Image 1 (spheres, rainbow, N blue to C red):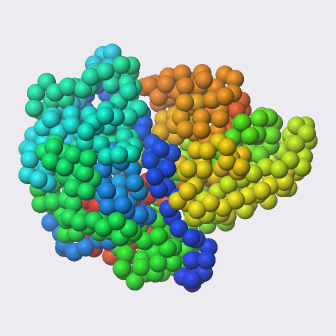
Image 2 (cartoon, rainbow, N blue to C red):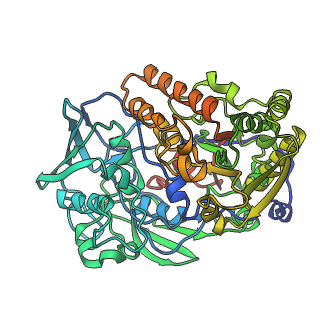
Image 3 (cartoon, helix red, strand yellow):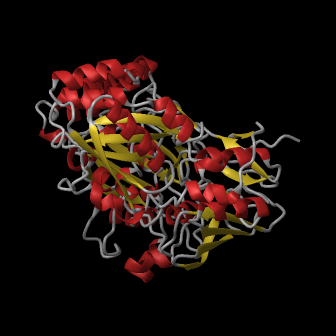
Length: 560
């Protein structure tokens, strides 16, 4: 019988390499800690022009199975699992398993479908969303889903003074909340959300981690400590957690789509790349999306594991600070100098694609190869621009995190920039401190910054809408684009684009925005589009690998 998991296992043979050699090339996959909550965990979605929707998320999920334990290797855990508080990707993967939202995106398709909301309607003026909740849905504490749970869960995302928020809460739906005029419950099974201005990405945003619904009874009981006692309606219930070690979840008999096949799901912190590889091969770890790219040849060769070819949904990027590199010609020269083919081959070991759609990756709507010229190497033109700007011999400073693909990409880019006439100074930064340095515009190495953007919601608004906005962290603190003449109008163009209902017109709008963003400002240089490398044991079945490649954890069908 074929394995109908999402993502196709790769069977291509390659020469194996030793685990020790892999360890020497990759250090740690901690780059996304904390900072990812602001830079990589985006919210936004473009949905079809439907005024009503009905159905269910993954209706064929769950059911009886063999039992057993599935162990996922994760980046880190603080033992705090709270939809309003980003700590690590691993902790939010636990939230994904414990809680569900009003809507759901499977990543097998990019459209939101009903989940805890059975259906919804949208008013003619696109301002009022009325959600009808499913009846009889149980939380892990035995209480039944009602509108009070939804108001309590979303209210703490929208209100910075909510008493159930822990200190330092990141509230990923705060920007959405700023556009909410009112959130009310006409009755126990109905929730009404009224917006200040139209936003057709609402249903997608509600599928994100921040939109997960928590038991109000649990919120009342635990308050700001809810992250240590999270109670949801998801396929797995919280069992135990130890900071720096693991989170253990148990299958929930009352999950509305049926009890998961496995009995336990363990999310174990494993940060050493060689340990990730050896644990996969030995079966100590069942699966992960944190496998080092340098191990892909070895893993594809070994019959003990499966390597999945998942859609390219993430961006490898280099931000250019316009305050430090003020001449547009110089910023364009930097972009033209970069050898993306070398980065793809040597930093990602071929797990990815060249960025032919600029900041929109191939797996998302709005991808347009007419933008390929914006990420094409042209050394001769780069040299001409450097000469014209009088920048030959200028020292450009570049920083990158010291883990995963970042060091090799930095090495290639430094050589590329040297080849077109710059002097280059580089620094390699511990991932634990990298985010704080990104936000510090006075940092000595803030000229160029290598980074990545993963997406939790697959839509152009989550990529272009986040990075091209002059009011976002990317457009302000990282690149200083907000200081450039005319950049403020990009915000209006982005708002118009995300609300377009016609697919072709929406794509055309994002293409126009991206070309203007690149040609008039050039504060973002695309390096590659890639997938996080998903690998599992050969006997693991039923994982949603397309979701896992985006750090979303849907294990309700998985078996071992």
